[in-house]
Image (tube, rainbow, N blue to C red; front, side, top):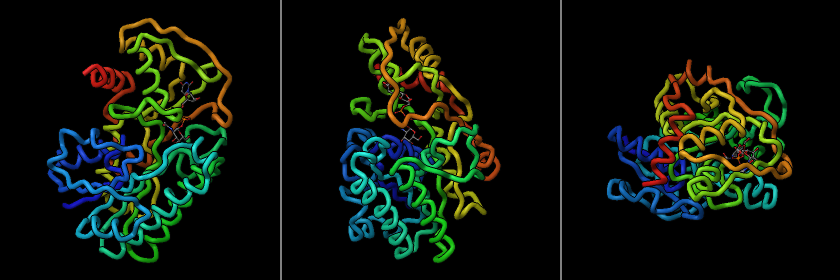
Length: 308
Ligand code: UD2
């Protein structure tokens, strides 16, 4: 089938693009290259139609979406702290960009939109593991935006028959995640620092936990969500289903790199949640999702990719 990946030159998008190509699908990418890069698609670029453009630009989006059966909508400003500092811009890209994607999907007759949502929709409510039947209660603009988009998706499925699926990503890691921004994922930062012979810094006591999921598994969840039956209008946790503390994570990364880990501690980040883990039963039962890569194995692959 012909597919479009918005944000396809970004970290997660580039994993989805590769998986789609492996399965023999035709792939188009729309990316504004604000955080994505052509390097992320370097060795597959001759197999992908890449267009530079903004998801808020309806004409550009319609041109690339025309003829596509499934749209994977990954284009977004992906930072919680950035959304707090720049709520208007974050809303415009994340909410208006998604609404535009839904409208374009309807106009071009796309069968399905698979959307990159986030664990941020759950907010700080402490009950674990997070399960989709819980009432979402986001506490950041980013979380509000992702939840708003989920509601738009469900409404568009109901009103216009565009099939929609929202995937609530937990803490995604893997090759091509950029370690250089102040908002970078903790694994990309820790791996980069250890490979450079430096120590790691914990914000807080390091006992906070996250459910880290390998990007290849996230790509597989997207592919499954594109074709599963009876799932339109629904949302699914995409995680590993395992809770890992940052202290344990640093030890695991030290093992993968083969270096002892020097630890320093700084005050906790404002708004940081203490613990996070997902119930992945709904994705398993309804999408057939089964994460194939453990955190340890994912770290080994990431370290090997960074060294190469
Ligand atoms: C993740 C997602 C975010 C959103 C959110 C929902 C990433 C990169 N971000 O935010 O988009 O979906 O989940 O809840 O996946 N930390 C350190 N030292 C460092 C860097 C980070 O201790 O050098 C801590 C940080 O304070 C936090 C944990 O590591 O407690 C994870 O931080 P993160 O930025 O990787 O991801 P998170 O969970 O804040």
